[in-house]
Image 1 (cartoon, rainbow, N blue to C red):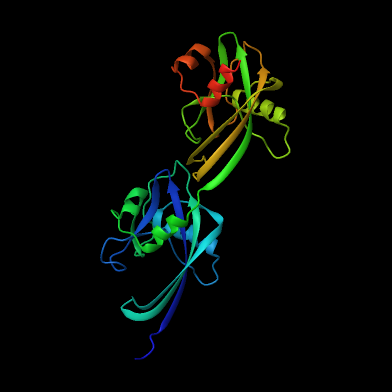
Image 2 (cartoon, helix red, strand yellow):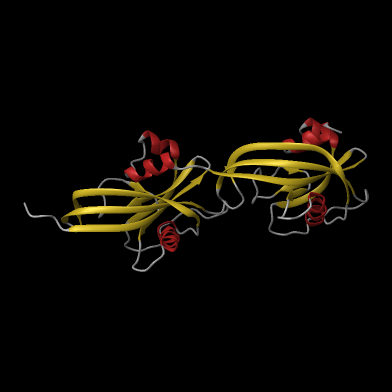
Length: 291
């Protein structure tokens, strides 16, 4: 028997998760007669960097602008006797699989490329992929099994600012985790920044107020998995240093930083916090109950 012609292909793909869903592309009928879904991605052009290729392919197949990780996993599949474009070949596929993410406010996916290898893009429940309810190429299941959620530990500094009966709080915007809930003014500590200085900076940015920062009155931490403001799905551990601080009690707070994770600042009554009338994060209850 004559040896089949060899065909080797290098392609780049991305695992893009959103809560309990994964972004997938459905192969065109000319590629698969039956319904079959795959990771967004595709073959590298000659001389093209794999990182650039996967970003390009994601946009062509889903219409979305993605960010992808610097590292990737490599999968190798040898398929002697496979059919490619009507010809039987000895195929070897090298697949570079990155982690990817898109912004939470990204539009619904849609195919941009005309006459490409995919005809549909959609967010698919991971449960449907794993149960077999949604038919996928083996690479999808393999990549999901190997995928490790990005771990992030973040140390942040917050201010507990009181006036009789009230606490100064900020509301989380649609760009942040737990959108619509209220929290203490504060945020991440910049590299090399003193935590107390971070508190004063954040109160100014989020409330428009100058504050006097005192000592640490409590330490709180929170561990959860969810979508970060960047759109990346993370295993997140937040460590929160809570400082006592003071401002002019007659001052009216106003958010200065625009387009961030805070969309409102206000004096909130302790009674509304304790009754649950105002939705707050656990760090607020922790801080208020400790005083």
